[in-house]
Image 1 (cartoon, protein in one colour):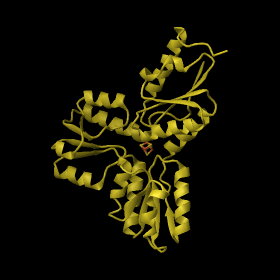
Image 2 (cartoon, rainbow, N blue to C red; image 1 turned 30 degrees about the horizontal axis):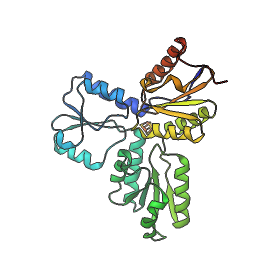
Image 3 (cartoon, rainbow, N blue to C red; image 1 turned 180 degrees about the vertical axis):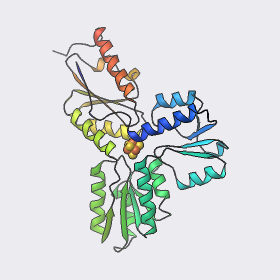
Image 4 (cartoon, helix red, strand yellow; image 1 turned 30 degrees about the vertical axis):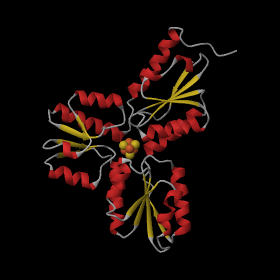
Length: 292
Ligand code: SF4
């Protein structure tokens, strides 16, 4: 059995930076520390921070006079305003790539563009970017869903397009192609993060070379889920797992090439645990021979 890691895997610099910022707050003894939701979509890291006293909240009404961590996905403008009014000190871990998209959204809306954000409605990053358009923006998940909104706009409307940092370029291309056919001016800003592009490309390359893929990362992580979709798309058996405890010896045989990939919110140690588990099963004779 051969186990191969995707060339680009594990924590991206934005997530690493966010986790480090929170760990250093803990080291400095700051209390209480609040986070709206989970810092990253990774249960192992979330548990570690919660054990160290970081409090997960679902609404700012639950927090007062402490430190509020803004996640690497960023947050809405209103979240910052409300946090200040509740006496919270903001620790802003918004990834610089997401900040860039927020700043462009603000600038373009001030220049009277209608700002279209290609991405998933309800995703914290996308809703955060939208809040900077001051009512001049909209989220486009797909052309079909947005047709009625776009039909109402005149051909002369100045359109600007941004996107969620983790979407696939093909999705952006498809929507931009439609908009160019409809409006005279379409300014496109490719705000896809290189980290996502690299991880997607290296997962795709590996999935084409192996017999089975394991994609490690939180089930709630949009970028990990996309990696699993990309891998399944080339029709290789793919399992999206959160930890080594979720793999099953019956999935494997001794002659298989196994590919391991992980989302941007997955520490490399989790991939190593999966590899160790597979090696332990091999040594213990728990992995079968290939079928005749
Ligand atoms: S995936 Fe890219 S945009 Fe998202 S946190 Fe990581 S570096 Fe930042």
